[in-house]
Every structure is written in C-alpha cells, then in structure tokens.
Image 1 (cartoon, rainbow, N blue to C red):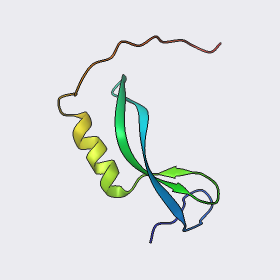
Image 2: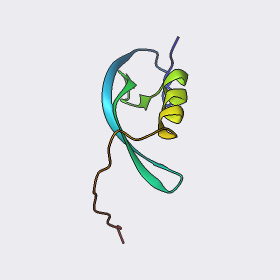
Image 3: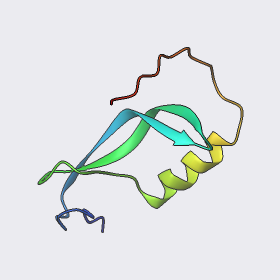
Image 4: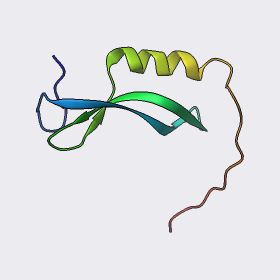
Length: 74
C-alpha cells in the first residue's frame, strides 16, 4: 500500500506531470511523468518503479533539446 511520506495518509490520486530536475549539473525536463498526489496534503510522490525509470531514461538519448533562460533570485 502506498503511504504519503509527508503526512502518512494512504489515499492518493494519480496524474501525469512535467517535472524539471537537475542531474549532473544539467537541467532535465521529463514530460508525462506518473506521480501520486496525496489527497490530504497534496504531496507529490513517485513509486520506486518510476524513480528507477527516471534514472534509466536520463542517461539515455534525449528526445529533444530546449533553449531556456536562467535567472538567480538574489
């Protein structure tokens, strides 16, 4: 059974989202990423299988490259 790591609640909804990660000092965007969202607190969590898949695809060939601006909040 899946349990929220933030509040311990065990009811969630599943959605697909776009997430931005920094991996090996590079920005990586992953689209259609399955995520479990806690119905009580809204915390987003990944299953172990999703985390393993994220790791495997980020070391493969990217689908595309994007140009992005970078700003620093000072």
